[in-house]
Image 1: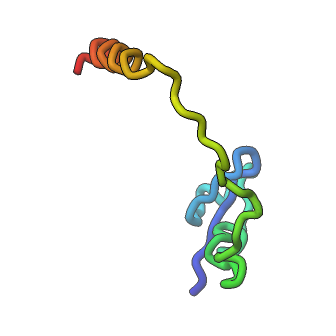
Image 2: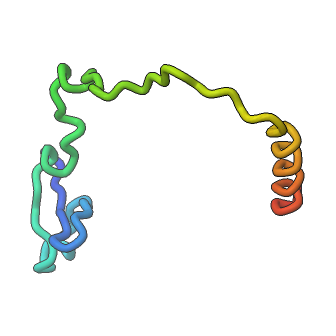
Length: 83
């Protein structure tokens, strides 16, 4: 027996089938493939690469005096979090 699912018309949430929910006009029955499309994704689509390059060619050096600033910010953060 195939598992049955209900989808809410307003918020789109998917629920397991229950007869009381099925009687509600805000729910309609959907197949498992409609409820969980990620389970039925083709294998060739799962390994798709992004066309976005995350390379950073030039990373600037931090400005002078940033070490003291970092120490002060760390102390302030520890005070604020109680650590």
